[in-house]
Image (tube, rainbow, N blue to C red):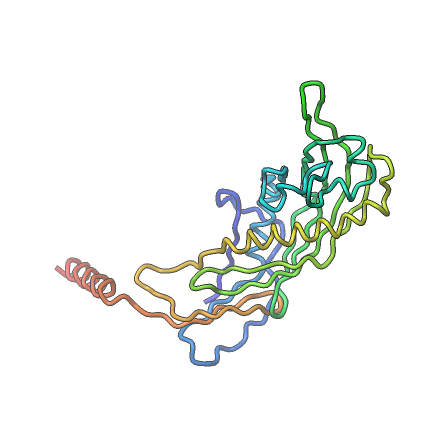
Length: 260
């Protein structure tokens, strides 16, 4: 059974691209059911999330435990972003740093053998927050960024979870108000950003995606594999005897009522 499906905002459709052409392998093995899905489903969701500005985020020290000590201009005990950006700590001492990320185009995910590849293009503006009534919020850096990451996913029960590894993270400096910060020194921020983004993406992937299930059907030992432009789930299943019995009885009653 083949079907085309997409994930769109309020089910309105309008995804401006089509599913890839894939060759579905002939079923083999002992599994009772095989389910195939192309990366079109994931990309349609990412496209509509981008159009609704759901990919745009504001990040500060309060956003994550990993950022609690990092997004500061002055470092107390551990390292912080102030160590990476020229005279940031001297120009703006004891200030919180806020990062505003805006996607420049829809993200892209491509399924390949054994994993998926994810690419995101964005605009990243960096601000220092006011620390007292005499200060104001100031933009200190404006930049473009491109990230490429490898995503590994697997099944944990009936939930799809995973982790991410950033393969490449490029920053292009557009404007800066920090002394001693140029493209070369700003590019070094990639090491700092890659570690943070890996943790952030992995945290999101660890939340998991519940596999769709049918009432009265219990999946047994599902197996997930990635292939060129599609994923496959192979599984056994068990029918709930009570549910099946009630379903059959209802069908028989409906049939008899029509006959009568």
